[in-house]
Amino acid sequence: MPASLPAELIQRQRELQLEQRELNSRLGQVEQDEQEIRSQGMLLEPRLHQIDAELSKMSNVRLMRLKRLEATARRPGITHTFDFVQQNRGMFKGPVYGPIGVEMDIKDPKWVAFVEKQCG
Image 1 (spheres, rainbow, N blue to C red):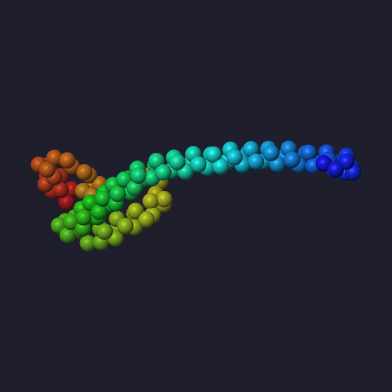
Image 2: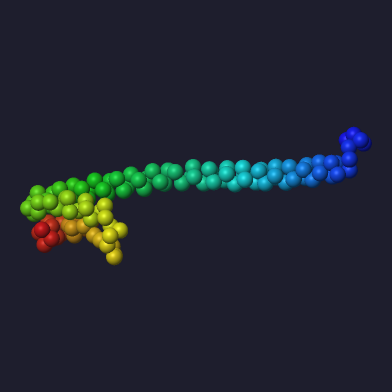
């Protein structure tokens, strides 16, 4: 440092250099945190795609059930009503479920026809 600089400027230069080191250190920590978050996101991404696929599959199954219910139970407009309820869930005080035949997932095939008849 040139000796001709006033002491105040030298002191200010040191303060700024210290501040720059602190900021560089914080920047390094932020970049490290960012990398950790990106890594976590990459680990979660496959699970997210799996969940999306499962939801899509469930949605397709529900839609098929709804169409079948509309056709076999002679319930015209049930698809429209179901869509309205799904799009406006926030208007209701509690959880709202679609037609029971659409919501149920019966694993044992011997009970499917019985339940469909009872709900139809």
